[in-house]
Amino acid sequence: MAYWLVKSEPDVYSLQDLARDGQTLWDGVRNYQARNFLRSMVPGDLAFYYHSNTTPPGIVGLAQVVETALDDPSQFDPASPYYDPKSSPDQPRWQTVRLAFQAAFPGLISLDQLRQTFEPEELWVVRRGNRLSVMPVPEAVAAKLLAIAQC
Image 1 (cartoon, rainbow, N blue to C red):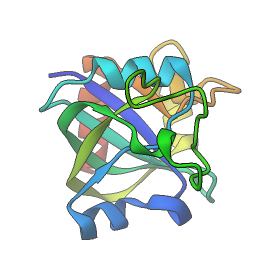
Image 2 (tube, helix red, strand yellow):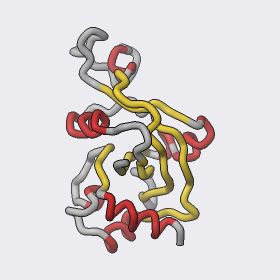
Image 3 (tube, one colour):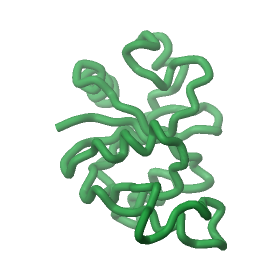
Image 4 (tube, rainbow, N blue to C red):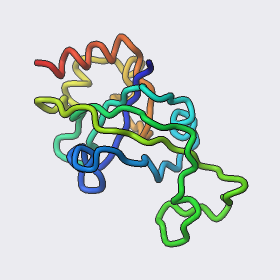
């Protein structure tokens, strides 16, 4: 099992939305590096759910990868803000995964707390200027995050 961190703005799609819906298609990723991370996911992987663009930002819970290698349907929809005119159903450029709600943490693990606990090489979300919405989390870091979340 691998660990990941996925970022979403809570007013766009929060962990509470995922808990309500049970599962969601993680669509709209339009960064090649983040897309490649999505392509690396396998069912059973866990993703730390990070609320960005809020005060304070931080990790609020866990999701589980339940389906992989899905073509992102938003790339084909001209009405979608994620439409990509260079994509076609026979040659899609963007893939995604389906995530299922796993757990809400008792409290937020804030970005400030993450910066105090981890170096930028350990946890990419603490790097200045990092804008990736999907990133890997090393197993040792994941173990520390899970331990922090149980406090």
